Length: 123
Image (cartoon, rainbow, N blue to C red; front, side, top):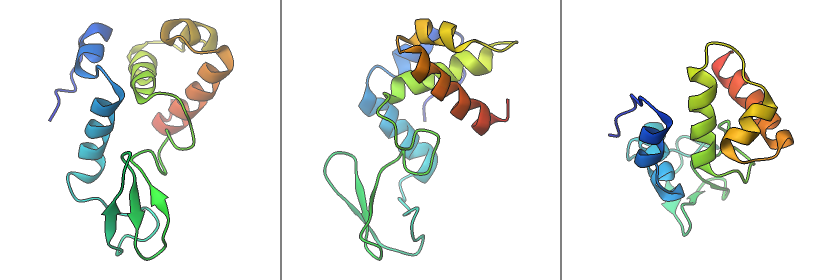
C-alpha cells in the first residue's frame, strides 16, 4: 500500500507519476483485489481492456471512477488527487482561480472540481 502521509506536493507527484498508478491505487483502496459491481453487488465481474470491468447481471461497464467524485469526468486522476491534496491541506478556502493556476486547468474546471471535493469531504 502506498504511504498516504504526504509532506509536500512533490511527494504526491513522485508517488503518482502517471494515470495508471492512480488507477491502481484507487482500485486497491476501493476493492482491495475483489472488484464489486456498483450496479449489482452479487454479480460476477469480468475484467475488460482499458481498466474497465463488466457486470454480468446488468451488462453494464464500469471502472474505478464509477459512482465516485471522479465519475463522468475526463480530468486526469493525477490532477484530481493533486486538487484534493491542495484543498484539504489549506487552512482556509482556496479560490477556483487559484486552483486552476495550481493544477493547470481552466477556472470552470477548477470550480467544478472544488464543488465535488467540497461535497465529498463536507468542507
